Image 1 (cartoon, protein in one colour):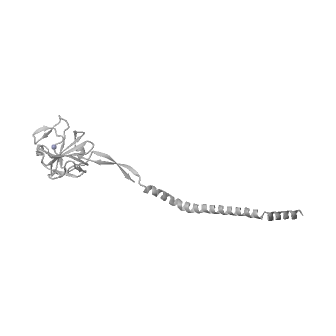
Image 2 (cartoon, rainbow, N blue to C red):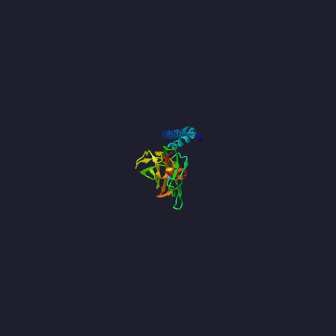
Image 3 (cartoon, rainbow, N blue to C red):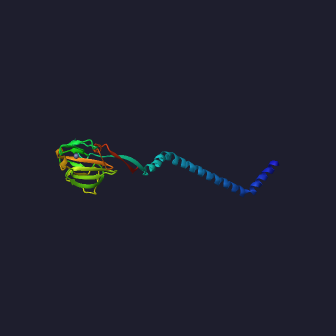
Amino acid sequence: MNSTNQTNKFTRFLRNNAALLLLVFCVVAIGAVVIAVSVTGDNVDTPVGGNPGGTTDTPVVDKPIEDTPKPVIVKEKIYFASPVAYQSVGMQYTDDELLFVFNPTLNQWATHNGVDLLAPENTPVTSMYDGVVVEVGESYGMGHYIKVDHGDNVVATYASLADVEVVAGQNVAKGDKLGVVSTTASFEFSDGAHLHLEVAVNGKQVDPMDYVEGKVYREIERTIME
Ligand SMILES: [Zn+2]
């Protein structure tokens, strides 16, 4: 009796609450589908986006970084270069009033504020560095001469020239031809064909040989995109 009674009660409960049960079933079913989809979605994401993505992720992430141009500052040394292919040095440089070199042309001992670079006549004379021609002139002692401001208060005088190819105010680049070696410096006639070269730093004469021999450089900072 008891069991029959309970069965009847359960049957009656089912019958009375069928709609509620159906609703509960539907909610559970929808929930299960949602969970299944999201889990499947994760599974889809993980193998496809994870494993192959794992191997492709690194280059895919790195490439845009490599491809994105980044400004990098590089330091570059730019050396002064010899202005002429000289064969020997004639009269050397003297830097104070008590030191003299013998000037055979003048037949006397005298200061010599430059160097004489001996080369065959018509040997090209080129600019030792970038600069601006500040003066083109001619004098009895120096012959045809060119003064070039090479920046940083360095002014070079290229003298005993012929066939001068530049004018005052002209920009010149390192290696540009200024003229040719000649014998126009009358005070130094006995040296033969040569370039008389002077270098002044802050208005004071210095030994040009450090420049001629490529010992002087400037460090230039350049920004490049890497
Ligand atoms: Zn000289």
